[in-house]
Length: 466
Image 1 (cartoon, rainbow, N blue to C red):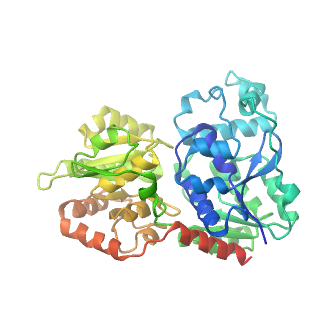
Image 2 (cartoon, helix red, strand yellow):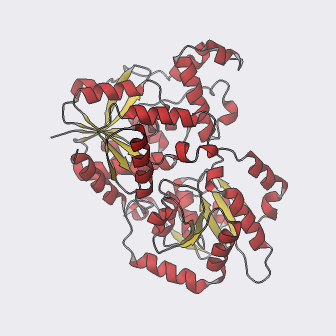
Image 3 (cartoon, rainbow, N blue to C red):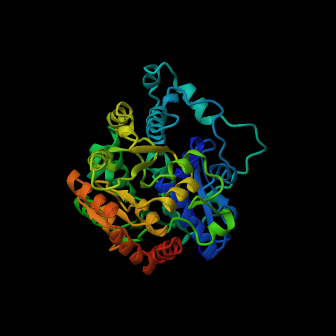
């Protein structure tokens, strides 16, 4: 029986410095958990590149059965990650900004890898200091080094689900495993660095292009999380002269696993609100007044500037009772100007509120108690917040571009993300017309939404066909 190795190198890097989860990590976590439930821990193993020991390690996956939510501390424990004892040299100002922290850490890693001492000297640091930071670990017992190369056999499956293009040296590992006869699949979330590169940091476009092109040297099959991503990927492969099978494994609209609420939360009804335990007090306070929810990283691609402009117009209306807009996420790329505007305007005089890095349960709470949600990105590979909103029975205002109609179906109100007027009008319809909201919520209730078990089943079917 073939063993399935699920690469968590990306998650391992993420939990070194972060406790909350982003879209890619959520996908890899939920798919792995569903696959363990279906096939058992004896067939599914978690793997990651261990740069400290220079090996590609594997770990038992049975811990996923007792980890219903993404718990960074538990994951660090089970895949043997120990966070650095001290802040990263030259990167302390980015400690609370996961995107910039990860990007500039990658820059440091690459320069360290190629021996560019000058890069560190310019920043009043040194290559040896960065090596010490990356290698610093708490004292532990003899490391349990379980090398995938010692146990992997021809016909085993290697599932790549993370953004491993930011890990120097790992591609050589995948090439060697492919040469040993492992069947390698790569899940592509989007081609944003290539189709929307202006929304990302300098240099990422060339690095992403290099990685995707080189991946053809070890990937047997590409999987795409949406038809939109598949179209972009097929175009790219064709332009590069690469012949590979692509297949869609659509992501879920499910926000959490069935039964999690009963097993992991104790709910009480207070002042008409569904209030789970382990939610910080500012979040319930925000929800005591009507609000519309926008979940996701605060970055230019999420189109937050146009959304805020639309809300400014809504707040000036006298003919409708306008709710507040709640932004729930972390600051990301190219938002310094937006955040300065919010600061100077006192967050549009209180019409917009910001929940920084909400936990899984805080985000769940915000979905449960909102009027509706809004996702007006200019581009998405899928659009997890749209599905999460539907899973909580709440409709949404959604962009009519890229993959987002695949997620929203006929259960949401669409807008043109490039038009402030269109965003304003779509939000106004759901604010002012309760019958329209009720109609869309009824459609949600009558629709079988896609679950993470569906994703795992389709994923296995896809990789089994290679």
